[in-house]
Length: 478
Ligand SMILES: [Zn+2]
Image (cartoon, rainbow, N blue to C red; front, side, top):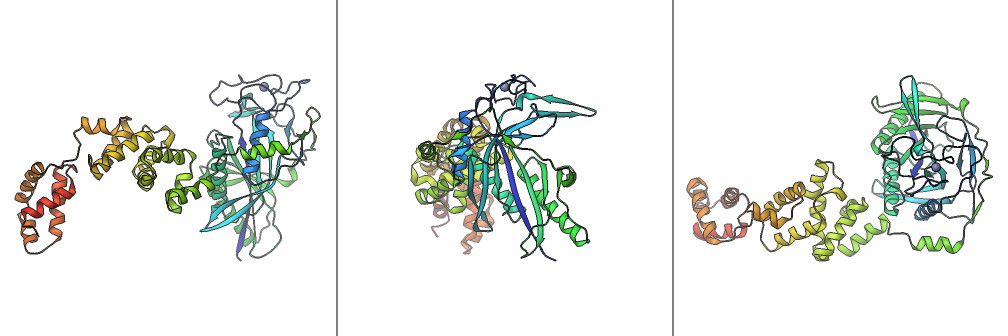
């Protein structure tokens, strides 16, 4: 039997606020010693009172608007009650039935066509402390407790692991454009839980879903969903029955393993948080927030195509990273829009190759947009040839020096002087008598070969146009 896949995603993102969600402790704990960013509030001491972080509300509203959600006039916080060693108070302040954002969507490109994936809700809660398991004992670091955590929940409308990956990459990109989160997956500031089930093609109902956890990269999420769809299909093929359960992805083994079944599903006994007032969201504040949203990836991609004449493919890759799109535009501002295609080719070609080979983010690269723009001027005015420019770029990348310094130090400037080129041409013709004879007997490709030999002898520095002209003169002007 053929099955179709049904996936819904829950993404938790830590917000990039200065302080935590309900206290004044610094939320920037990544490199802090354990248990140093703590106070009675985030330690869950009795009798303390939480205070709402306004910036976190603003960031959540920005995200909700960017995801086409509506923001209801009334929103509130609720207590989600459960007991776990990483939960300091024995409850988490979250949002239950009145989230900040409701009913939005984002579009993904699925097999060349656009698909809209609906967003159920965007809500705000607090992160938990972190447990570090060490063999037969565990340690707790409370620094993470109370860090603002935004959750984006999709409808179960994602139909393949590929679509799930596209959705996550798109959402991740939007969060970075908004600047509301580092969205760093390795550091855990962008985390995804996936609900997946399968059902016979064209059937309407849902079979029990499995929640998959512990995936720390886009690749892991893709592989875990791929594995899980296959596992569920096999259970049904073998006449087994699927049950609602939570499974963990084991990266090293490439499998999911059972963590708990529905029998143990918690009843969170939500109730309104009595220590916080409900929030009445002012309509004019929403419109101000909407007006202040930065340009988002899709809009920027479309603008790159209309304004700079880039292809959909190139514009998609450039705007796939806010930093790369910014780099491109900074460079084009210096070269002029007429050079946009050339700049795009260098950024997506040789420069990206160097970035990938060294696992460097473009914002940390030693070639500034000014460096690249300067180098393109030198190529344009004939100071260096195309092949030399590639070598110069590589040295710029390694040393952070400007192109003109490198060219001067390494004597890489292009040779256009006819006398100098003539000398090399004579030498090349002397040792390649066969090719000279071939050309005389009408073989045009012998000319290309000889030009190549001169370029090789000058390590790419000779001006190819001048070389060709001189060889043709020497060979009798054919
Ligand atoms: Zn605190």
